[in-house]
Structures are given as C-alpha cells and as structure tokens.
Image (cartoon, rainbow, N blue to C red; front, side, top):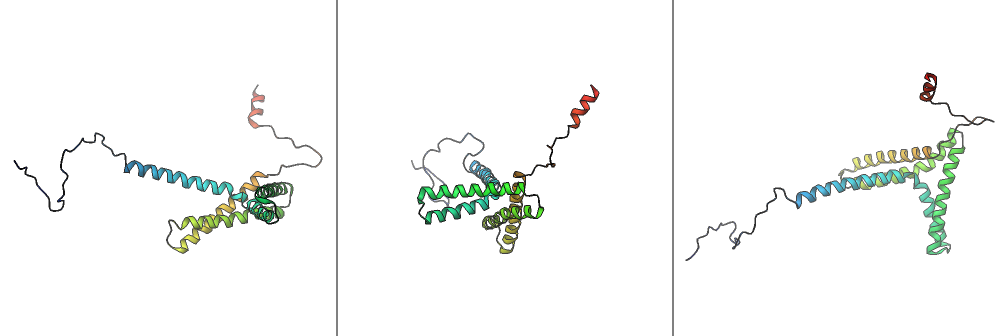
Length: 193
C-alpha cells in the first residue's frame, strides 16, 4: 500500500524515517552559551590587556634601555645567553637609578625632568598601542588619532604617577630625626581614661 506524503516545492528532499527523540531542555547549550562565554572572556581579556598596559607603562624607558644594551651586547659578541642577562641588568639598574634620583633630588624642576624621562617613552608606547587597538573598532582616522592621543596622555600620566608613588621622598629636618604625630583617635581615648 503506498504512503501518501505531502512534499513541499521549497523542500523536495524531506528526511525519511523516525523522528528521533525530542530535546527535553528548554534552553539551548550551543550557540547561546558560546556567545555569552565569548563576550565574558573578551571583556576579561580586554580588561587584562588594559591593566597590563597601565602596569607596565612605567617600565617603558628601562625596557628601551635593556633592549638597546642587549642588542649592543649581542653585536659585540656576548652571545645568546649573555646578551639578555646584560640587557636585564641594564634595565634594572636604569629603573633603580631613576627611582633613587627622583627620591633624592629636592628641586621640583629636576624631579619633573626625571619623571619626564620615564613618562615620555611610556606615552609614546601608549599612543602606538591605543592607535593599533582603535583600528579594530573605530573606522575614521581622525577619531583613531584622537583616541590614541587620549590614551597616550593617560598612559604617560600613569607612568608619571607610578614613578612619583614608588619613589616618594620622606620629609626630613636638619640634624633631628622626624617623629610622627600621634593619632587623633589614640589621644582621645587616653584623655577619656
């Protein structure tokens, strides 16, 4: 006995056979979950990348010195193992000298010059990183330049601030040790008792 079947003109090749089992879950695991997970991981990745840029901004000048000294050491025959060691040592010494000089110097103009030596390479590096990242989402060149300049200002300012926070000078008086003022909360408790 022949079976009667409705065949659509749009879908002439319908599947034959049983229908299988029906999915009992009311939400889909595949595309929706991957979309949500992708958005979450992208947000975390961009946030981590921005945190890394701002954290490493103060080290742009020592990195530049380390890279230059490492290349010079490699060209002079230090070898594959010796050149990175010399470069890392030069970068560390540069950072230590910069922070120590910033902490010791009392003249504001010299302090600004030392902080500028660290902040300007960080601002240049920040400009290029933000400009490259802005090409992903900003179509016009004028807005990419504006966002890159704003990023350079923020990253250079971060390097300036981090250097001043790391090497904050301690106040000193000539000939005497500096004593800290008693806490107001502690003196109020002792007066009441």
